[in-house]
Amino acid sequence: MSTESDINLVVEEIGKVLLGKERQIRLALCCLFCKGHLLIEDLPGMGKTTLSHALAQVLRLSHKRVQFTSDLLPADILGYSIYDKNTAQFQFHPGPVFTEVLLADEINRTTPKTQSALLEAMAEGQVTVEGETRVLKPPFFVIATQNPVTQSGTYPLPESQLDRFLMRIELGYPDPSAERKLYLGVDSKAQLAALEQRLNAADLERISDAAAKIKTSDALLDYLQRLVEYSRSAEEFAYGLSPRGALALLRAARTWALMEGRSHVVPEDVQAVLPAVCGHRFRAAAHFQGDSAALVHQLLNQVAVIA
Image (cartoon, rainbow, N blue to C red; front, side):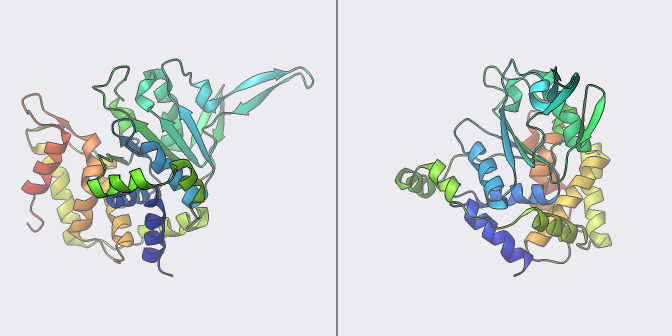
């Protein structure tokens, strides 16, 4: 069976519990195949937690969840040492970060100090606790959810931590037909438990390796560079896409091309993933009235595919 068929089976399986959200499911999978981390931003009750649970279930990866609250401490995520009087030594008790899929639920409801506890883990795949560095065995994916910053009790994520997320997506309200199916469906917990495994950790590695080999032409890289340069020079942007952000865009475009059954990247692949990869990395200049979505729209419309 081809990689494209494997991925379609995963999308179909997750779609049993997240109705009418095929594009968002594909973007989430693209992020995971890129070995990135995913930020899901939306109102409560839109299916953010359901998506993360379904991904872990269908991929059969170990899964832990941390509910971020205002009194959460870094040790609650990373772990801590307790003195064992029988051995006269301190014994380290790993925190929930030592897993394959970590759901950081409502990450912006905790303080910046605790938010930053995830920074090293997301960037380096390791954590340092009490002076000792401990490696997180791959695969390690952080799927964080956050509520809109307009809601009470939220702390905006700093740019340095936002940049650690390869993608940010929104789920949005379901369409009427999908919502009617929700009303007629069975309990979501029972549906999650019934999801079948479609891929495993070895398959994830295989797909990631295959995505890295997807070809990019000189013309495609020229288009990518024009996009990056426009974001850095246009006066509507407070600052442009960093080299790390540009590499993330290219990596995601390669993976999207693989998911679509292509052996090379086309401009449509870049355009498909750009809003999710770049939207949270853009900031509007002081005089510009639009938001990051408006910047993405302007970027895609102003930069020509062919010079």
